[in-house]
Length: 78
Image (tube, rainbow, N blue to C red):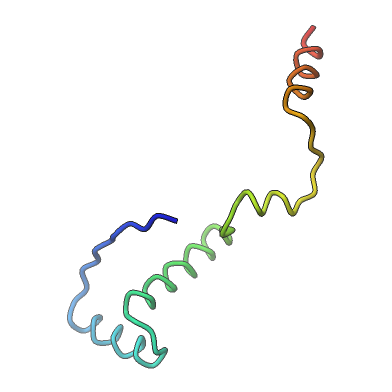
């Protein structure tokens, strides 16, 4: 997955609190913030699979040859 840089400005008080909680968790401030963002996004919109295609494969849905499927669709339009 390609990463993008995000700059977030915080005041000194928040930076101090962030530094302390990250130290207690034994992670970097960046890692702590990424985890907090991930948790909030999951609460707001549900978990996002690491690999969406792999997630689809677990559904065990019916599959067919794409040419056959297109042929069936076109035959249904006649």
